[in-house]
Image 1 (tube, rainbow, N blue to C red):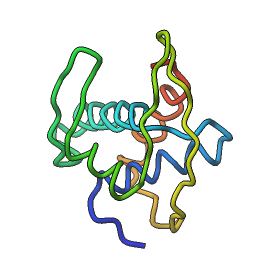
Image 2: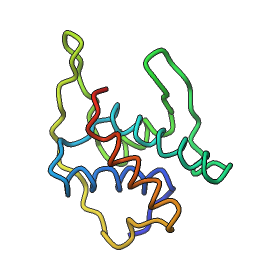
Image 3: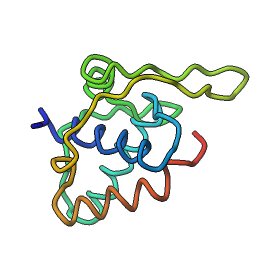
Length: 124
């Protein structure tokens, strides 16, 4: 399977990581934050952007209209609902991905793996 953009591949990688490690399905908020953290880490190592996502910095964190559209339209990912300061987990059927094509080059793969291991289970 070929992915349209790096952002599509990153989202697929995050979903697969959560599934393989028996973690709750990521929703739009968690996925957005993880993609942003991977972008930041990549920029710290390579001094260039990993993707061409357009980030806007809001009170609760970064947001990308492009990534939001990808999550809604291409992945049919629901948004988490907040109640009394707590996000309720989402439950949805993740798309099936071709596993071998989910790997990035060595630098990006190390950054993605390290970021997911450190941040994927942290509270919002």
